[in-house]
Image (cartoon, rainbow, N blue to C red; front, side, top):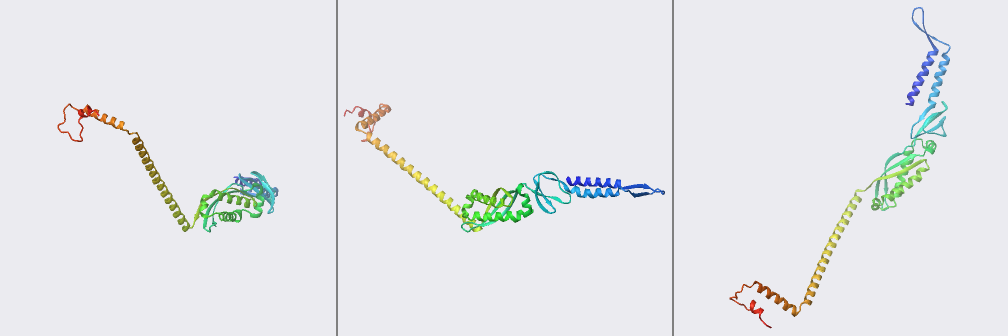
Length: 300
């Protein structure tokens, strides 16, 4: 938008210069003739001045800072967001973004037990607004390739080498914290602020991955077998407890049986037989079969 405005201003100045510098008239034959007036010199000066002045006016977009250069040298002056005016033909502004950037990179390292590990890292960073002049002076806009990527590789190698491969997944928060702290320390000296990092993936060699899968399967089988053994032991204990309870019940019942109780139980049986008797004597009496009437009146 600002570039279009500058173009329109330049065209307007050019039109005014032409208007005051050239006089159009008709000759005797009715043809148009152009006569250069004394104001031509002023018009040329006006156009030349516009070519110098317009580039010195601009605007800094949101999330950006302007590094002021004077004859190509960094002045140390930083332009904030908004309109700016510089010395024409001497100063210019280089725009440097200070917005947060998400940068993903793959880093390779070796674990403490010498297993190859490939890690996917996403780094959220931004330029320090107070140090954009130093960043531009030392790195221009190549800070990602020259500083950030090597720092990530070095921090990942240093952190992962302190863990066994199996513990990397379990201790992911601790690994993340170590890498993040290392990057904050390394990049801050170059005017780069680390917001946070994310470990999106750990990849191991196919052989190690297969070994881990077999180990997990073995652990699960052992855990399942252990649970089944506990179940069998529990059921066996229940049976023992039940048997002991039944034996104790029988013992108590045996202790409570006396001769008088047996006689009472026999009388109760005889009484039930009398209640069911129809008044007829049995035709056949066995040695073990009771005769209700006789048993009732038996006096012993």
